[in-house]
Length: 215
Image 1 (cartoon, rainbow, N blue to C red):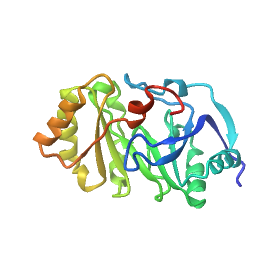
Image 2: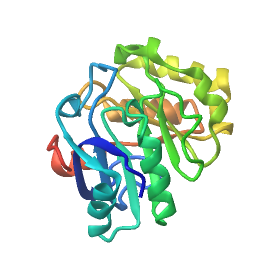
Image 3: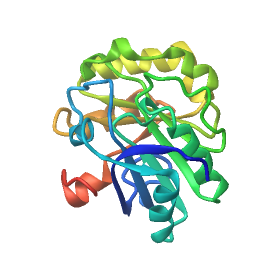
């Protein structure tokens, strides 16, 4: 294997709490570091620290769980350029791989076998200025777009962006309520009343385990 290493906060096995594979047993590889500071972030513990592991060490740990699905997350995994090497190595090993990214860094060079879960940061996140809209040009039906919504203004903003970029024709689109900031039932009603072609999602892992790291 190539002589490459990454700073890793944790590698753990759990159920996927979001996205197209929600509920599927998944190995999570959480990379350390993130250039964003979203006000609702639930993984601040991944901003600093971590342990530097080689790609071979990461793959060995992932293999030990004998799972079929792997999610590379953060922090912001693409903040470490060699994340691209890891993603390709996981695909080459036969895993079904997803990447959770903030949408602030380019996905252009991410292996196309990876399902890229790309956030579009809303005004309520505090990081709306970081959106890299050029990423939309690289999206395929294999990919996913996620809006985390804090209030009605965020919802209206998301609806505008969906129409502006014709997002539902480019990828799967998800809307999630920011945990503890918006009533999930209200958001569900807005989506139904507006007949949006999106998928509503709650964070399954928080329903099951709360805010525990490594879950």
